[in-house]
Image (cartoon, rainbow, N blue to C red; front, side, top):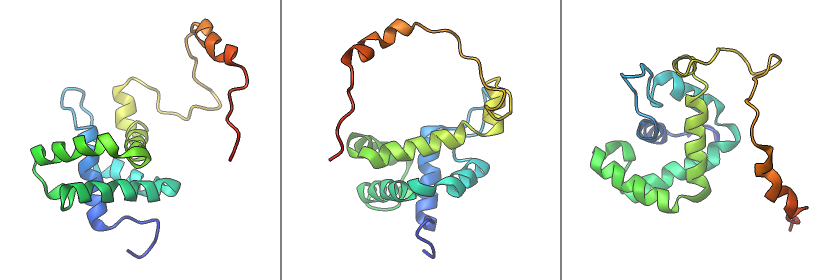
Length: 149
């Protein structure tokens, strides 16, 4: 591995495999899966500060699998993923977030959802008025910030 911010070929293959497990392609909605080459390229290009946790998650998956995840059959992958979900912690959460954020900013996916292909600002997005009383219990707690240690 030439750069700390890069994934190895094995890790990239496992990332593509996990991404397809999280969001498979859909013929019904005419959208690619999260393993689509364009979406994968976006993931790799924008990992940034999440690289270490994503690398850790992929290494955990490979350890649980006893080999690269991409080399397992579907049933074995599902069993490893189930075990990983139970104890993957912050690394698992980061991996899923990276896959979701890159998937849902793909133009094809946005079009399938009926969303306009544009930046959210300066035009902004209008949100429907919600029930602000749902925040009353949070407001009633007062200063709930924890002190730094």
